[in-house]
Length: 558
Image (spheres, rainbow, N blue to C red):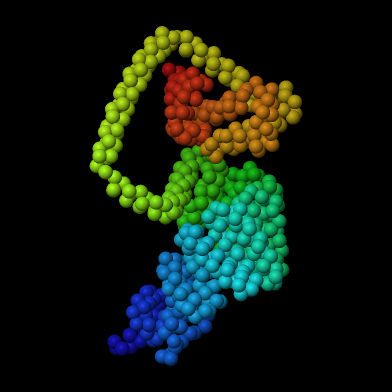
């Protein structure tokens, strides 16, 4: 009975869970039977396409090379990238020893893409360039175009699109020589991504459309949907919304059928943008929500960040509380992305300058006690001077504050009167023009003002207000913009922007009692609540808290 169960369970035991154990045994003994069992695993996992068996006559180096290379392929396919690197590096010297240039090229390419997954772009680029050099010496344009596409992907992942451009354009030229239509379509798709990252949306659209036409001709429906998504990206940036919508409506069903979750999430984000452009916030929420859930599962913080910001913009009018929750998640993701990039940059810095730091540390250890004594004395004297300086500054500030307090106490009645006048002036002058009473303006001035207000509100939604960015989007010089704005509104750009933010602040305080002051500050593009409070008081004469209290008293009749 025990024997029967052993025979039944044997195939189940021969699963991917045993690969590590089998490799450990093979690394110790290079046993042929263990190697054959490993390749049974690789075939079962569809890493290899056909059975591979070895005999006792197989050369030991050939046996190790095959086992280690295909182990690297297996670990890459199962997303165990450090182990893929480990076994790829074991196989590489054996390819070089056997002068197998084709195998060496494949191994280098595998190491390159494994390091891309590990976000070690310097190592990835190094292996990919070695691979390209072998392909170039062999005079194989097809292999060269493949490696150049990998290099372009590496530099795109490293956020260096200008360098990626050189590789992808060279790859397209080599691929034309090789007459490989499938890879040529892929390279054109990569070129579209590169030019989008560079902000050249016309070029991005041109390459995406070419890739799309190629995929249609090849009959690859799954790739057609991806190219339609790339076309939609460029079309949205070019403000050709109807065309972008048409492309996405065709792509989304196919992406769902193919279970291509990454491209599906990107397409949902784009369709959310289309719905926002059409003022269909409810539909936009549905698409952004689907994208956020996809990228949350994929642990793709960058694209989830876009989805969360889209949800905030779609919800802020109808459900401010839910919108603020999405804004919290958006900020959390932004901080996470920033921290990750900062850590990567710091790691590269440490690796680059490690030798210098060690040398400096060695020199420091050899410094004489006499010199260290003088350094210590200088530090003590410096600290004493610093403490004295701080004490003097604090004392001066204390006296100044006392003087300010006395002045404030003496002029309190006058300030209250000024607040009433300022409040009236604000209502009747600063906001009336923005509330529809600008019929006296010329059509051109009205359009100018409408565009400026829309751009400022869009920036507020993004959480940062920048005069230069608004000026750039309006295709004007800073001097022209200021001159035109003063002529139309009588206000400087800074005062005009502040007026719009304060208008939003007052609206939120008047109509959304569920929001606290800190939340209103964020929704008006103030990252620090004290800065918001100061700006609000400067305009209205009271703090936001005092404003809310007075409004409540008026409503209750107190």
